[in-house]
Length: 269
Image (cartoon, rainbow, N blue to C red; front, side, top):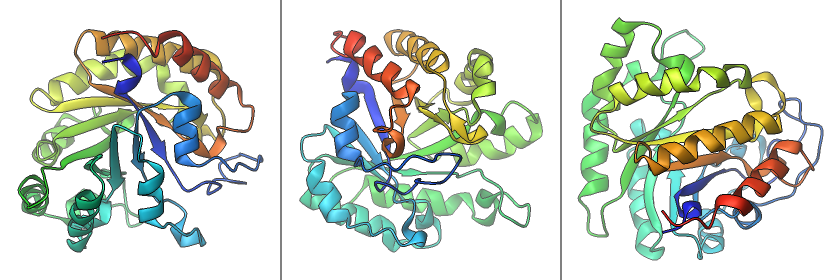
């Protein structure tokens, strides 16, 4: 296996972040084009922008992903709409590389100040996983997103959240604002303690959404170097790069990511 086989794209409908988050460029790069551009072998497809009129034909996207190793679709609403899980299973019937689903912003706070996860019993997640793991197609895994600012702050809250986190097959650790990148080693040690029996990945933003500006090449390279070592040590199984929607705008961080993957992507691991 090559190092690039452990890398994923966090994909969105092309153009959905034009003129948003401080980005003034107009991008047209699709998720599959970005996988080819960055040299990635897997994708999580997250249909952001549907509420703004972006049309997401899931079957067409799945066809475009034919040459990728693994494909996963975002499904947070499965907690309130169980039929979403059935849809994922049926899509997996037609596309052999669909291997998982992911719940984005699982611990985010609703406008009323209540974390979204507190609106559901743990048993709902257990039922979702039972259906994903045991169906007439094949086992699909479940992943969730967890930001570094969402743990390691309040021990009581961390303990309260653990039963939810334990229901997932894997957790992806992300850092929302680039200013917090120096905290990643410390946060990762806490993350390891909270996921002793759970698969782990980490996310790397190629655009600084949290601070609404371009990511720096220096921060991206530091993260990729650090995460490579974690992969080699067996402490994480992969890295998720975010996202295709600025990849063709000549932003420094993307050029650095491309160069880094050119240098390291074909390393045997």
